[in-house]
Amino acid sequence: MTQSPYPEQSQATTALVLGILGIVICQILAPFAWSMGNKEMQAIDAGRRPPENRGTANAARILGIVGTVLLGIAIIGVILFFTVFSIAAVTTS
Image 1 (cartoon, rainbow, N blue to C red):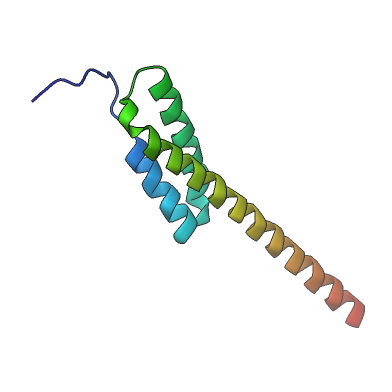
Image 2: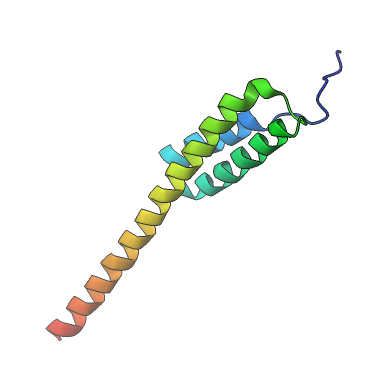
């Protein structure tokens, strides 16, 4: 087994999987992908993790951002729905 010249193992693939799942299935995972992608990019810049995973980490970060925005839009939509529903219920009574 060869020794890696970098002291830490890359988390870029895990972050990318979370980013994809955060877009496709469950938006609650997107902020975690965003955070992991940022941490991976910082670790690559500091020389603690392999630089060949930079593209994967950046893709995870971008997917995390997009998924987080979609999550925010969904939360605002649910709040607006219930607000309009409750106002309509009060005015028709």
